Amino acid sequence: MVLVRVVWMMVMFLSGCVMASAQTKAPESATLALRLPPAGAPAEANGTVQFIGTATVLIRYQGFTILTDPNFLHKGDHVHLGYGITSERLTNPALNLEQLPPIDLVVLSHLHEDHFDRLVQEKLDKNIPIITTKSAAKKLKDMGFQRTFGLATWDRIDIEKGEARLRITAAPGRHGKAGMQALLPSVMGSVLDFGPNAAAPAYRMYVSGDTLIYDDLKAIPQRFPGVDLALLHLGGTRILGVFKVTMDGKDGVTLMQIVQPKKAIPIHYDDYDVFKSPLSDFAREAKAAGLDQQVVYLAHGDTYTFGPAEH
Ligand SMILES: [Zn+2]
Image (cartoon, rainbow, N blue to C red; front, side, top):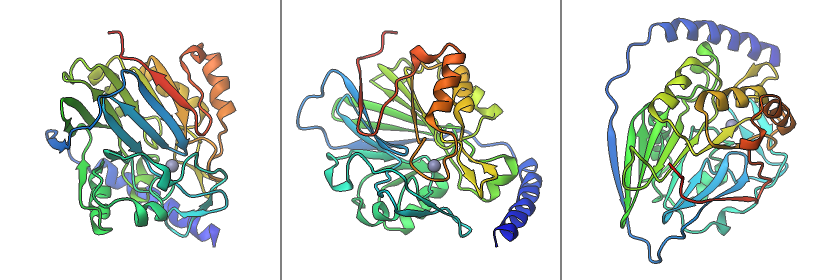
């Protein structure tokens, strides 16, 4: 059965190569808008990033509370990744869904169950705004989520919450080699620019999403120089043990060299049995590249605190 799947995926890979080369140029990017009710209490001066597990992170800054790629399954639970492929969770989330503070919005890199699981599909408040890819936005709407915002690469959404401002821009991401894309959901990275002037943000955060290294990523530092913090989805995920669909440790360091963030936090590295590149791979490569001073390691539940950037 597995052999049949491998052969079939090979066929899809080749047909996908043909489709990829026939793609036309992307249209101009769009700007969406979202207005949230103002916060009751004044915001803390410092921001925080709490690592919950997989690619699930709670970001709090300037009055915004943002949840990324919500996955609240537990050790021993399974996710379905399509085509009959499943994966077992090896860790527990640091928080349960019910323990979350009130969330302003979710940023979702793509619609795979290790990023938006069945529990979340069922229990997450259907009115929470979800910023994601166009295809995921459509599917989430079909699941009953009322406020989904689909972005193509470089599209952005300007978010207001009282006096606070946040701009989120969709960055390139690709969950597999060119031809594999026919099999995998579209993926976006995200750039979060906090503050009233998005061109000179108070703090600039980049979330890689489940991507491999490819040329389009080089446009990120051209459009968004001075990233203060990058969240890197690692794990070197292998589908059927063969196809690499997320960055391994070495790729994570390459992405740091491309984007040049002041700080980077590796996430998505040990939570599922399809993750084949442990965090130690990344740590070794970061050290060898002389980048270990820029890396912040968070265990599940740990919080990184940051002040406004000094630009
Ligand atoms: Zn993933």
